[in-house]
Length: 340
Image (cartoon, rainbow, N blue to C red; front, side, top):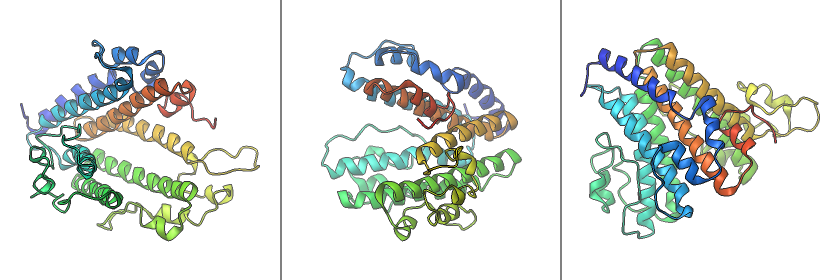
């Protein structure tokens, strides 16, 4: 039942607190990496009987089921509000943008059944019941431009446009909130995309040997001009990837892999990614408790629970590929970042 803003804020804070206490985040994340099989991981995560499917399919089903549970729980919290804040709808729409990428790819390959997608209804942007008519699925929505099945070559361009559109919706909605806690969320989102732009630029340089002008075309920008999301990334294009002296002047130099001995050093995007993941989730935890009874906790809940999904995916991959647990614990934010 939908409630007025004050009552909904109180209910959501209490409900979200209870769910997070049982979630595999923080120190509890380590439990995901103590099991020895995908079957044991399923039992730990869902407390239910393991599906009778081949083990080769179990990892994917486990990840999908965890995502379905998260989206369902988040929708219930959002539905508590008589008029949900636009930022909450934008967070749900992340999955619509992701869904349309999957749908476009499926139609490109002439698949007859709609791929398994995150069910965002009744807050959906896409008319999923119109499958396989892509034009009808996106008609009268902000995604109406996505009205033809993309070729393989067009998918990358369209996916980039979808990513930019999601960021635009997210920041436009976040700019509509005025309390101190909600402004803190806007600052957290801004920092997140600033760091991710630097990481993306760095990966394109190191792994794809892309030049600066081409990289600039692949960054995420704030079209309103109110937020500075890409300046740090553009500046970093002039920094030698082997020069500590240049990188240590970065705004987020605390995320860099150490240069303790002052010897040979190369900037490590994986280290930065792991370090920032820890910091981002830690800040979300602090804001969750600092600004109760506002929209801030439910946004932080979304961030923390998405981190839990990443932890579950990491645990699945660790078991499936027999990867080192120590490295997985770093990704999950349980162990300190290391360079091994």
